[in-house]
Length: 194
Ligand code: SAH
Ligand code: MG
Image (cartoon, rainbow, N blue to C red):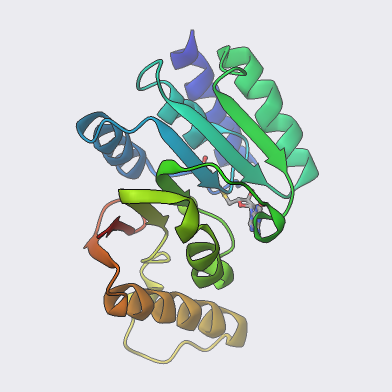
C-alpha cells in the first residue's frame, strides 16, 4: 500500500516541481536510520510528506515531528500521511521552523528547507539534539553549483550558492560536531554531535 503511495508522490512531485529528496539520498537516509537505531526525528521542510513517510516506513518505532510553513504543501502532507496510515507517528507543524519551539530531544534532525537559513536552523535546534545524535543537511551540492569554480552570473543564484558555501565552512569549523560530506543525491552532510 505505502509503496504505491510513495510512487504516486514521486510522480506528483515531479509534475509540480516539488524538490523532494533524490532516490539515492533517501535510500542512504533510510539505511542510516536502521544502522543507528534512530527513533525520534525532527524534520525541517516537510513539503508533501515524502521523506517523512519514507523515514516512518523504515520501522514502527520511528516517530517524526516535521515542520512546513507553506499552507498548501502542509495540507498535501497531511493527506498523504493519512493515506499512509502514519498520522500517529508523523506530526506535522504548520509554521516557520525559526518560530517553532520544543523541549523534545531527538536522535536525528533533518534539515531540508530554505538554504539561506541553514546555519540558523542548525544553531536553533542544536539544543534539541541528543549527545551522539546526527544533523543531516540536504542539498549541499545545490545541483553542482556549490563546487563551480567560475563566477555565477545570476546575482540571486550567486548569493544562494554563497550561503551554502558558508554553511559548509561553518560545519567544517564546528568543533562540537564531526561532519562528513557525501556526494549522494544533491549532496548530504552528516554531522555527529560529539
Ligand atoms: N523534505 C522534503 C522536501 C522539502 S522541500 C522531502 O524530501 O520530501 C523544502 C520545504 O521546506 C518546502 O516545502 C518549503 O516550503 C519548506 N520551508 C522552507 N523554509 C522553511 C522554514 N523556514 N520553515 C518551515 N518550512 C520551510
Ligand atoms: Mg532537499
